[in-house]
Each structure stands twice: as C-alpha cells, then as structure tokens.
Image 1 (cartoon, one colour):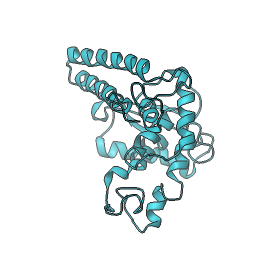
Image 2 (cartoon, helix red, strand yellow):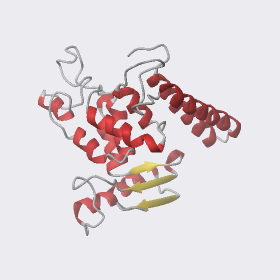
Image 3 (spheres, one colour):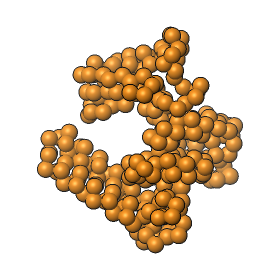
Image 4 (cartoon, one colour):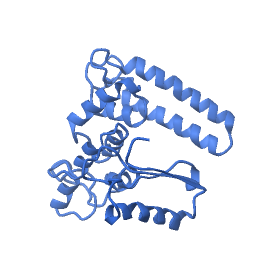
Length: 239
C-alpha cells in the first residue's frame, strides 16, 4: 500500500544513519558520530511508533496504511529496528511469505532470517527450485545471476546482473561465518551459524570437509587482508 510516509524508505534512512555514525567513529569524528547515532535512535523510536500494527505486532506499509507487506517487515528486521520481544512475530511472518520479493530485495530477506536465527529458512530459500529461485535461473539456461527471477517476470532482462548475487555474500558472512567488525578487517569474527539442522557446520564433527572449511576461510581472509589484530571464535553452541 503506497503512502506518502513509507516504512521501507524510513528503514533505509535509519540504516544509513547507523552507517554514517560508524564511518564517523572510524574516522575519529566523534561529534559527527554522536550526531548520527542520536538521529538514528530518534528515527528508530518514531519508526516503531508510526509503523507498528498494534493488533498483529507487524509493520504496516506506511503511515495510516491497513496493509503489512513482506518488504516493510523484512527491512525492519534486517536493519535492526524490531524490538527483541517482537522479533519472533516478524520473523514468522516473513518466513511464511517466502520468496515474494525481487532478486535485489532477497539480500535483505536472507539477512533478516539469519539475524532472527532462522538459518534453516534462509538456506531453504537459497537452495529452492522453481521460478523464484537461483536454481530456477540455472534451469533457464543462465550460468550467471540474472536481472530478475525469470524471463516471465522481465522478458528484456540481462543474464549478467550483480544485484542478484545475494547468496554469495550471505554464505560467506552467515554460513561460513566470516564477518569483519572493524574497518579494514583489523578485527574479524568467525562464527558458526546455529539452527541450521544438518545443512551447515556442526562443532561435534571431528575434522572432515565441514571443519576444514572453517580453517580455509581463515586462511582466505588472512591471505587477502593480512593478519588481523585479533580473532574471536564462537562454535555452534550457546555462548
């Protein structure tokens, strides 16, 4: 439902304020960092006040809207706008919806699911078949990610589009678990995703390909960026 004050646009505005604060902090501009951080907190408070449906605890499409779209809830969850007590309800809604978004917005859908500990659901989407899937692109004859899910969705699309490559960074960050936490990879966190059933890593496996991948990912990062100042490792168990 299109409204003048839009939930998705404001979610991106919040994300950009958070990113600006982090950039300013990294550059030593503490005053700017504080300004952007305070603006982000103000937007977060306003976002939840204006866009929350009190009955469903989901996010509506815009101020005064009667409809809750997957996009509004995906953006809110992926960007950290959802209060902890409502994460479950929003994640349930998104998981039920499935892959209803474009190849571009699939990036944020997968991020939202992983951040809500719904790794199984995210991996199912990345390995799904059908018209709205990456395997579906391959079945169409393409060997590189396409501009849209299928030719039926966009007959004049190209077959060489980087904005459809969400699984590439999602697998590295959330499945292999290589995540920079400071600028320039000066500090890197390696973790194993929980709630992935028998699909991803299992800390109980003594060696083998799954355990080796964790070591290879460390070598890969060190090889490209040099030795990080510090590394924290969290196995696939509760800390």
